[in-house]
Amino acid sequence: MKNLYILFALLCATVESYAQTTFTLESSRIQYSGYHVAHDWTGVSEAAKGILIRDEGQPSRIAISVALNSFDSNSSNRDSNALRVLNALKFPEARFYSETIRKIDEETVELSGFFELNGLRKEYKVLLKEESEDKVYRLSGDFKVNLLDFDLKLPRFLLKPIDENIDLEVDLKFKQNS
Image (cartoon, rainbow, N blue to C red; front, side, top):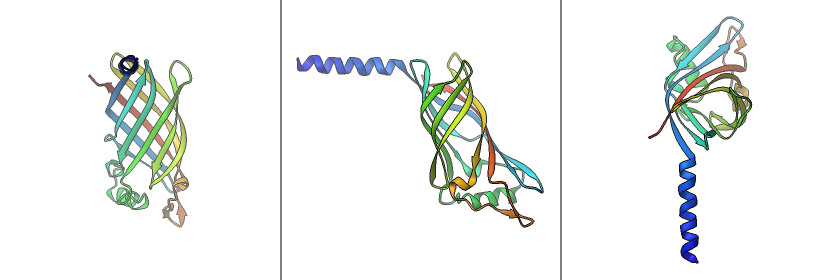
């Protein structure tokens, strides 16, 4: 009887591993847009790292991280100030984790998880467009992040602070692992 339980446990583990597929982030583009009464700007990174798990063909978990120093706004002074404001020496990455991914419709998924910045984790729900073809899975879309949620002091220019909200636009392409 004991051997039967062991065999059953092995069989369940084998079936589970066949139903679960792992994808690694192959290419990415993450763009942030900041706003001030005097001017707006964007910064872009194509250096994110990540993993996506699909259970029975449906996305179930995701983890993404991006080094803050990989963002380029075409102004080294602005990028340097952003790293200081974001406390990047102590917390060098922005991260997003989700263990709850819900299909909204044929093209849209909702990721419920945690966005981490400046050492703080905040719950976020993000709607993204999904595309799946062969062994490639793509997520894209945009959402807002409030910098004050992460205890960040907003920089000032001409005596006015920047807008507390930044827009994030993501395009993430995952490739199925062999």
